[in-house]
Length: 453
Image (cartoon, rainbow, N blue to C red; front, side, top):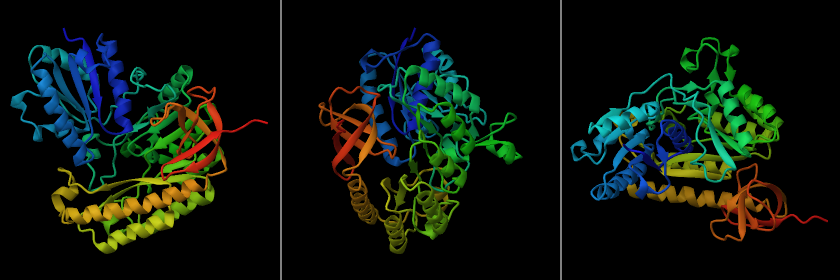
């Protein structure tokens, strides 16, 4: 009987949370989670499909695992967002992959594993409008630092951006019961966690009623619990836990949410607000449901209501038909906002999306690379100048672990999600400390423990 399983994870924070769901499901069914791949009978690859590079990484990993499979009897399962697409990349008859399971079907994993023991190939990639894993407590075995953790509040997305595969891999939007979210937060608090990130493909569109958790089925939205309500409920109830959230869609973020962030000290003053492009024409082609001006107005509201708030973003450069003028519009938007940091990517055609089927990926790679380099260069300048303003200030830092570059230093983050390193004294992981900032790079603040007189 197959007993030991190992998980290889690629992708977003949602995948990390899903790993904990999977571990919980399998361990309750008497399977053993192992941290050594060579002790595993079952290897699960939790995949990301948001960009082509992530899929290529998975393909390369499968080639490596196939060489292991020739030496030892192991079973390989593809799970996560790429599950619905993997057959187009791998010839199943080679049997590198033994089973494929989509994000809505993890409850079936014990039965699926039993079926492959009988030498049957198995695929379960159906999407569900119901599944939120609301009655499964995620296992904390996978979580290493025991300081920060995640709680999923919603799954799926209804926005149908033309470049995005998420609605096809994660399904339509549905929200988890506030009572279940509170129970998960309470459990993490009892375990000693100090920070929780609320997760969803689009957290700001969270909407729940006792009658339905499917957003499109909610008729009277005024009677529903929305994201601002949820955020305030948990901030009040768990005032010793620091909360973050990700990801927001600009057209769903409300002034009410901003006011709740302002009101509670335990809600971090940081918002990740993907823009994707600074060009109205490209935003329309992307089916982003806001204009450049509406996005700028939201940025202005954030800065007015929460002046200390840090803002980050996603930008895609080289989208279908993007011109030099469109690119300059993006650079000018960046100059207006002056983001604290960002995530910048070249556009890649994703099979199955509207843009793949209807639009031409006609921006040459050399131009995409040049535009991306210009965006990165500008962001480094802005990031450096933003961080420079912290010098000689004192920041409250949650210690998350040893610095990757020097074990004599701690690393942690402040409310603004800024990475801060400082020399160890007598502190412990999970402790809040005040750190005086001495210098900075474009990505990190460097300081020392504030001296007490």
